[in-house]
Length: 166
Image 1 (spheres, rainbow, N blue to C red):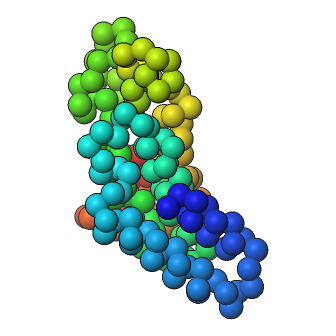
Image 2 (image 1 turned 135 degrees about the vertical axis):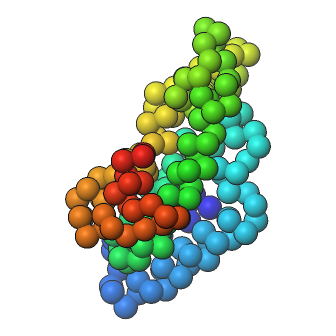
């Protein structure tokens, strides 16, 4: 799925305008397939064991901003907000997970360290967290850069309010 999203975005940068509609449809079909399958990365129970939020979900959220830029369709920004809320809900301070020092309530997403360090601990990884928040940061930059988006609403809040929350 991730490869398809990256390929789609790459193609959007290099195609004639007559081909964009077909590429956007392929993107939407793949995105819908992931959502409909129940296998969305932000929805996985053991998301922290294999770091799909940083390694996959982050790129999906980034792709929503890029799809908005390519199409002007706010549908993609609405999807980004929905995904971002689900990802924020998985943060360690929400689940009260303890890191390797015994500290709880860190505003991070700690993947299980076994895959990186071969220990049975949770470690915050700044590159992992940076990837996770990149799509949200892109949304904030976009909204503040296009004040025409400030008053558009999703779930009772304006995009500007969502940007301030992220």
